[in-house]
Every structure is written in C-alpha cells, then in structure tokens.
Amino acid sequence: MYAENNDWLVELYTSHFEQLIRVQQGKEPVESLDIYAHLFVNLAQQALPDEARPPLYIQLPINEQDWHKFTPLYGVHLFEQYGQNLNAVSLAMDAGFNDLYFNKIKSFAQLLKDKGVDIDWFEFDGGHVDHMSDNFNYVLPWLWRSLKQNLK
Image 1 (cartoon, rainbow, N blue to C red):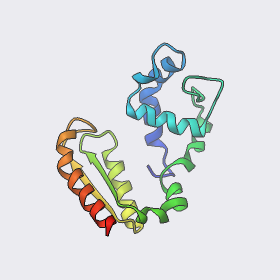
Image 2 (image 1 turned 180 degrees about the vertical axis):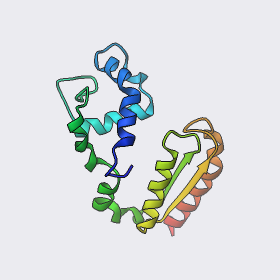
Image 3 (image 1 turned 30 degrees about the vertical axis):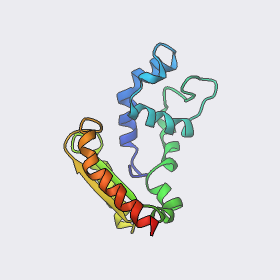
Image 4 (image 1 turned 30 degrees about the horizontal axis):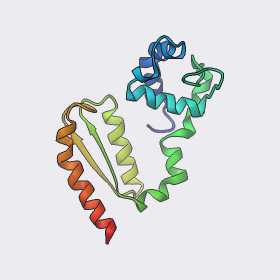
C-alpha cells in the first residue's frame, strides 16, 4: 500500500477485471462484487471517473499510463496530508494470515507506528471473514478499553 508501488492495485484490478466488465455491461449486478472489488471501484471512481459509464462510473479498461492517477488516493500520500489526525483517535488494524494482502497490511501498520502513530495490531488465523466470531475476543476488549480511555 505504499504510494510508490501500485502492484497491489494492479493485482486487484487484474483479478477482478472480467467481473468488473460484466457488471459495467449490465450482465451482472453490482451486488455480486466482493469487498475487494468494491475497494477497487471506490478508488477508480476517484482516479478515473466516467459518469457516462454506469453502474460503476469508471473508465474500463484501464490504460497503462493511467495508473499514476491512483497514487494520491492511498498510503503515504494520505498520511502526509492527514497523518497528524490519527493520534486523536484510537486506532487498530487486524489481518488474517490467509488475507490476500496480509504482509502489505502488516507493513503499512508498521509504517504508521514508525511515523509515531499509536496503533494496535492484531493478527489471526484464517482470512478476512472466516474467523469473524473469534475476532470478537480481541476486538470487543480493545473497543471497551478505547472507549473507557476516551471517556476520561
């Protein structure tokens, strides 16, 4: 998720390309997209909007020379602009060992810590949603501590 490296975004686009085209053509409903495709569409609506192309309203396919338009939308660029606000809130990140972008998420959390952001990091077995009930074992206590601390 580093601003200098769009590989993760290109991989996200490539792995969802055919489905995005089917949705753009009205052959599949928008609701069929998974969370990662929705993440990509959200960024693409900011970087490459095309109001003449419902229902996604993005330019498809994406040309090689257009990838740089995504860079200001995530990662270090956003930190430089808004990072000072992160210590005003309680912040936590988690990822499962089987999450598609586990290593990148973990390294981004470490980058935030290295830049002085107070962030709690949790890792767990499984992927994004398959151990959701187990995650409450650390999410709820963390939330309780954060709320209690912020009420003081």
